Length: 300
Image 1 (cartoon, rainbow, N blue to C red):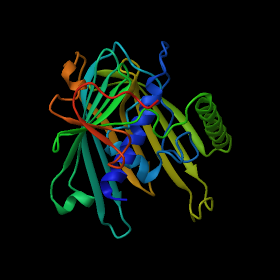
Image 2 (image 1 turned 90 degrees about the vertical axis):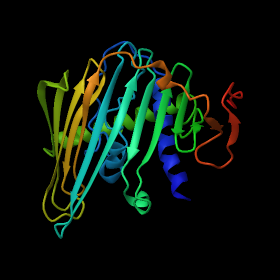
Image 3 (image 1 turned 30 degrees about the vertical axis):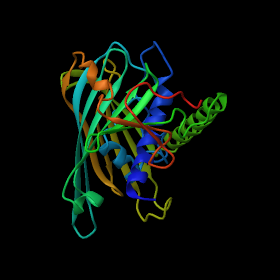
């Protein structure tokens, strides 16, 4: 499987997850998101370690996918940084900047620029793309400015249809909560409320999670301590800052800057008229290409 297909599968999976959650409308203010990335906590197995780091570097750390957020437009710049120190003292550092936009109807746009590392290092050029989540039109796109193409993600990619999906989510949530309570009872997990702080001009509530992996649990000679800190804005209903320190994977930070509370331009949430749209699935296999205009009927 080539690198482009792998990348598109990752992005399509995240888009599909967002698309599924965007269907749920909830008028009550949400609680801060669960502590993803903490072994033994709700996010273990999904956002821990290198995978969580890649999610942060793509600008997804701050996303709260539990509902469509309407009436709270904003634009901001999200800066994600990750640093890992190797055993010989060598350091690996990565930094990604993502532009975020949300309108009053809940449409979301993410402009991501990946640094020239990994496969991109050979060309010496960074890679940019745009992701649009439109809950009003129930559509999700990945825009590629270099080729003037827009990939429309399939509606139910990576997710089960019907009530079984909700049942599975409930089972997983229950298991994760149970594991978290076990860790708290064993003294291996500690949660601290850090109060309220103004970050980039918005009020945010902070939480610190300290998780200790006892000696011998994963073959470790000594206990391993992972510290995660999250600052969540109830006004914006998303994360405005987070920090994570894990001796196994290094340190990472995520922060919103230059937050503007005005309504973004409506054109930001539309596919440009001169883009060619592909539809049918992630990657380039089995897609149908057609010029921008009325979309063909959905298969569902």
